[in-house]
Image 1: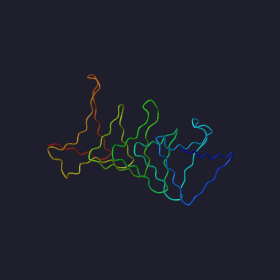
Image 2: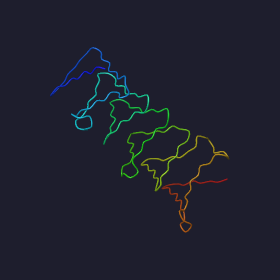
Image 3: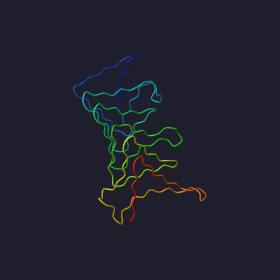
Image 4: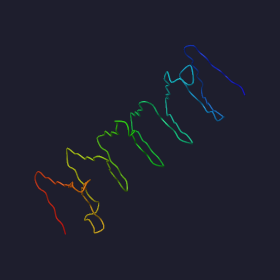
Length: 168
């Protein structure tokens, strides 16, 4: 098996009309930016005048001390399996979604918090069912459970102008 080594003290430029780099053994292709393959110094820039497509037949991972996905247009994350946004539980970080509008379209939606769940709105807040009337087997439940029997759960309903409630 042959080896081609290209070395430059400062800069190495190469250009071609079309280039394919193929690794035919299990070691694959490794791009490093340091003098030794084990060192993590330097940086790597990958750019294209058109599209960049990163795919893997197995798993793909993008990692770093900070990861950012930036788009001048729209950005999409798709999965045929599950999709998770998570932060190390021992860390103090969180997952923030900041946008003028956020929508979730799913068959079931669950919000759970081990300490608290808070929903706030400067404008109107609406909880509704798509049915024009709630049928016998469809319910909307607002409940509070006490952690200990000596504690009491409290539901407070407040309205600045009018509070309507009815029951069958």
